[in-house]
Length: 257
Image (cartoon, rainbow, N blue to C red; front, side, top):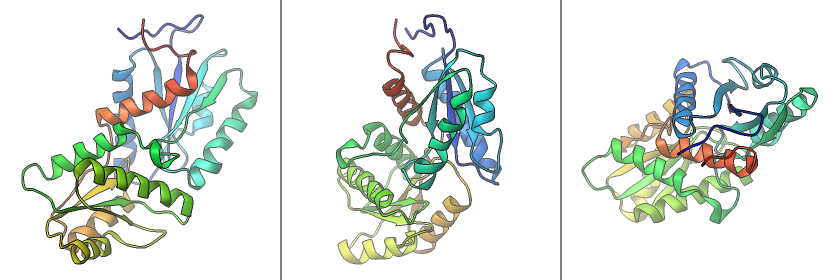
């Protein structure tokens, strides 16, 4: 049985902070994830906020919370690139004068090679299995949005290695922008290097949008047999968000009675 009760605080607040997009599918996906987290932790007041394009902004959400609220910011990011290193911590600094206790959870992607959450990999596998339900695969490309941040790209490689081990298949990394290779080039390279014929795309995206569409188009045009949907509101991602909150909030936000 989950418990919503915290001494003096019945509904702790969890603010999911997404990048934001002009594409309305992205905000719809984020709101769906917020609902999924509420199902996992029904006692939490889970709200979505956006760094850009869509609204509301994170600071506005925090400012709307009652005085004395204990809140946790969860960056809906898979790497600690610029947004994770600069934009999200800036929210914490800006909220310092608010009459609430605000804590910051880590991004959803790994911080160390051995720190790839099984929940993240299980979510990727769920989406990939839905895209390719029957026929066997010979290889997988993990397609991400991309970043110029070398350290952030390394964490995506860790996720690809974990996915490869989980599937017992070769898994290459590709990016829609920011760094090579493009997903189409990764498909061709994987086919040439290991003789993989049936290659599918696992997408290291939380929500659909322009870069997701670019990644899928590039891969399919190069002969990939299928492309998985973004992680979105998968049960595994909702549980991963909850574990990130638990890690920074305990014992402030108890989850069991």
